[in-house]
Amino acid sequence: MNSWLNKILVRDAVDATTQLQARKAALADTCRAKVFGITPTNVDEVIQMRSHLLKSVLPAFSQFCQTSLHKPPQEMLSVLWDLWLPLGMKLASHRQKLGHPLIQGILGVQGTGKTTMCQVLTLILQQLGYRTLSLSLDDLYKTYSDRLALTQQDLRLIWRGPPGTHDIDLGLNLLAQIRQGESPVIVPRFDKSAYGGAGDRTTPEIVTNADILLFEGWFVGVRPIDPDAFNSAPPPIITEEDRAFAREMNRRLKDYLPLWEQLDSLIVLYPTDYRCSLQWRKQAEQQMIAAGKSGMTDEQVEEFVNYFWRSLHPELFIKPLVQSSSAVDLAIEIHPDRSFGAIDGKRLYKN
Image (cartoon, rainbow, N blue to C red):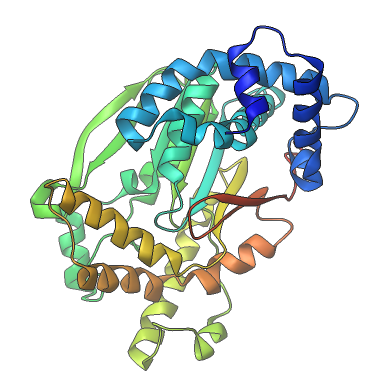
């Protein structure tokens, strides 16, 4: 952690040297400063507001780091200061300007930290006075029995996850209720451990007065592409059978477009190398096994991840989406060590 950040944390009043260091750090990355609305004129005010928010959220954040991330809070404070706090403030500002509940999409392949980001943003937004609801694309899965019937119709859908395995109408109804400010709302939840890991719906959650919905998933906001792209697709789309499956998944993506149209904004957690997702998943499974829990072998992980890449390959679907100036509002780069890199603002919440 930066020494000046530690001083901000422990002192009631910040000395001139610390203020200067914080000011330089806030303005050093011009793109990030633009994304979060930091200018030489308002930088001192921004630092003061962020410092106050940091101190108020720290107790809950420290507990979260210890119980959920199993890391000392000090390791995560720089990320909290540089990314999560200003992003939370940005979402709060966006919600205030909209005048109705904000539906924020968060897209990221496996292992990019979507769930962690949603949990931390919820803590921050709570301190700012906003009731935040997290919804995963997983929560919209069809029931176990419906997916069994789906598998009988298409034997290629051996796992839940790809387009076609979700109840889109369920999601549309929920998002419409939230946007209209209805309260309470019934939020579907999914238990991945049911039926020996096949998963099924579980008891829904009753939520009142939701201000902000964080809607995350591995293809939230992803749009169909030109089918000709599969003629020269990257591995593991190799055989003609693979290409036929990829084209079918691409076709089914069209059914999700009404759901994406409900998003007020889309954030993408974008790995510098999509293949890191495979290594991250292996690490997660190894950690579960080391903790005495059940987990997949490396070979099983490779089979699992390759299945998802064959259905919606990140290079074909996410990369062009990030490069678009109209579909994505914010792209956050993820390095192989899971640290955050460049933050690229697109539309910059121009609502």
